[in-house]
Length: 108
Picture 1 (cartoon, rainbow, N blue to C red):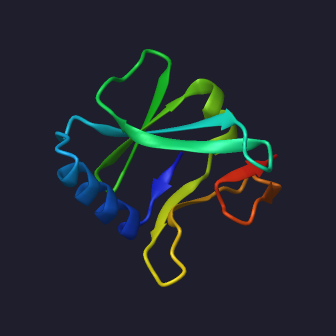
Picture 2 (spheres, rainbow, N blue to C red):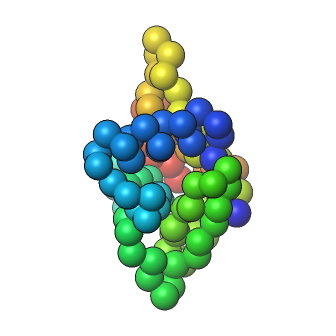
């Protein structure tokens, strides 16, 4: 399962409105190769649910994950930081053995 903090939920709702997306646009989270640690997170809105997607819902936010990415993301929490040193969305991933300083890439 993938969970969402209250701050991430609020930011997702605000972004959805700012970008003119409907409530049918869910959050798609995936993992792709790249970054300084080897793997990178990819986050965006998607209004299509593919047959191979796993769908999670937490705090009213639907999260779509393809099966390949799910191996890397199980147990992850999506958070949002908007403080002085805020980085935006952050992934708290128990599967990551190492993350880079920017928090956007990781390795297992």
